[in-house]
Image 1 (cartoon, rainbow, N blue to C red):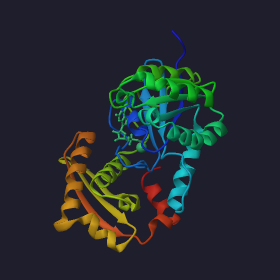
Image 2: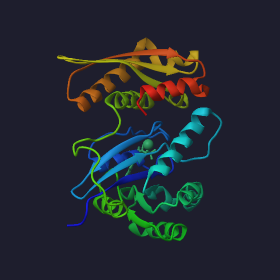
Image 3: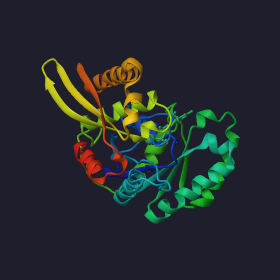
Image 4: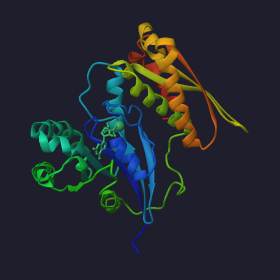
Length: 305
Ligand code: GDP
Ligand code: MG
């Protein structure tokens, strides 16, 4: 039997490539939040994958992209750089279905990724995701050869995070890149993130699904109270918006939006904790919080990140 391995692997890729879906599929359970809108993943989220011969800490990143404008944006990019410094390998996740149809998108994605990938100096594994959406697999060949040209040492593996295809192969490739070492976490631990953090991410996901356009990017969620009682958990959370006029949008007509967000989030937090949950949501205005480093630090501390 080969030696046990332990290490960190970063998932990077353009927004919407399926990084969070892949993380969840690898762990066999929902952990990262997923939505059709790019850049749902704001905080760094680590998942722990324990197999017979390795323990892999998977770091989902908010997407390495060109910073635009706000402090929040540059903090996202900063977080992605930090996870790269910690890791022993990179998994580049690409939307191969999109690339098979649009070679110019592949070019711009490779261009965007080349700097972080090459600067990290880490071994590269490329997961060509969404292959379930490519009916003629021959269309993948040009994508594969272009990627191999970009990163000659890289392993390229077609996967479908959605249909859970190709995942064992990917796990094997990641394991082979890790140093020998003992497991650092219990084998039933799924994440380094505390439950409060996961709950706030779930609420944020539901907001993303309910709200349109730019608004969700300007909301933050903080768990104010979490009390475990014999009857279940009593949770109270605050949704921060950056502008006064956003408050009404989050609440919705007759409170409908907030009510739906609350009941969907409650259901999912219940599934995660396996116990009854009483969830209270509040909406507060924190003027221009996306420019407020002090506030974002406080949020980060509250989230245990
Ligand atoms: P991220 O921004 O890279 O984290 O991407 P997400 O994981 O949030 O996924 C973005 C969208 O792509 C969601 O609508 C997913 O359901 C979808 N998606 C992810 N993986 C696959 C896949 O393997 N096949 C298909 N068809 N869709 C996928
Ligand atoms: Mg994501």
